Length: 265
Image 1 (cartoon, rainbow, N blue to C red):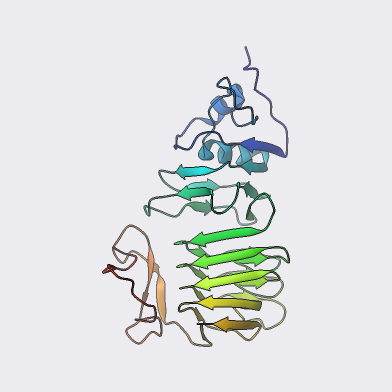
Image 2 (cartoon, helix red, strand yellow):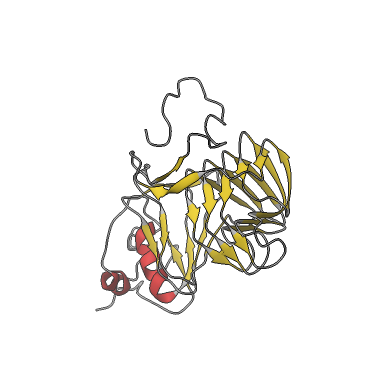
């Protein structure tokens, strides 16, 4: 007998109702109707973020994530050719926490795009992340449209490609960068080697290898090669780019009271 919540259709909406991680088989999720309702009733099957992504990988759709901190044990695989959209309750109330153990999202399909937005389609905050080897129509790594605001901290954007302008970052709205490196990104219109396009604001130290299509205010080092090695295991819980001894990134950021280690721990 099929569970009363069981239903499936293309372009579904999925509703996460569980903050802890799990690894439930896809067929079981389909049979129980997990993630298909925002009904708060205890009769609704549990739906973790990982479960919702499994379903969206097969059937496409928008994943709705209410306020809360969602702790994950290992990367979340995005393998939907049409991409997946995450809709949270706001950047101050919806958090996905990987505990520094691994990347949070792994996008495996060459044509997949991942969109993250709050209910007003306005604000995205990304920190302690690696954005690399992506492709998109505008902004190979990230696009910020006219009603959007991006805050990007402690994260590199590299190796990304766009058919438009802004190889790594394309901004129509507002973008705030802190301790960010943009390097090795390519656009196929405008200045092909520019890592970014349009206006952005830097706080703290940022390094942009090629900024010919950007208008930048604030603390940013531009048009300098950061002299970073490839992403590799340099010790610590995550892969990192090791800077050369003469890299402009070395000792470029301020140290806060009590800090004695870098990303590697």
